[in-house]
Image (cartoon, rainbow, N blue to C red; front, side, top):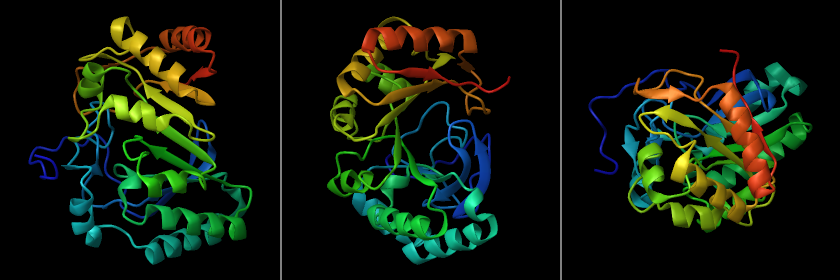
Length: 271
């Protein structure tokens, strides 16, 4: 049931225990400070992706009333800004990115838009060369307040792992009410949009056949500025989920660029 905590949580990596974490060196962003607007004791998300390195989603929901009821578990605007300012005093101008990510879907925070605006103001004052970045699963991009907040985000990196309903359900396992058709429609027209896509093998394979062709069609319809594809580089909750190797990712990127006209780049760690 949506919103009901699970009793068997497989957690390959521990949840972020603080509001601000890092800095960490990102393959794509440089020196990045993470901002976690979600509970520190459990994962709150609108997806239950089979590959998530934070494990099974404890509370899977897109219901605003339920999220409001959990406000006490979420950091306030003041707490977020205070934690970020303290960290920036320590690391200063070395930061390249202030990245909204964390223990689930950051845009579920009831005051996400307000926090984004204030973080951008703090950035302007303390580390003006840093970009404000968002990693999101895109499930809330049709919400007016999230849509407005995206105009403040320098780099919106939004998830698209599937182009058809079957693959979407098997890979992302969304909360009730989230459909791939609505997600693809909401992604269209977002300025500076970067699509991030995870390809996996084993339990589900979204890198070939009908799943691959449907994803190509979705990318062509969305027309993002670029697409970044990758595979798992952390432990996953289900060992049946397998990595797609770098040579396959390189081929997928080349084929997708040719098929869609959108620049597609492959990323992988040094395995």
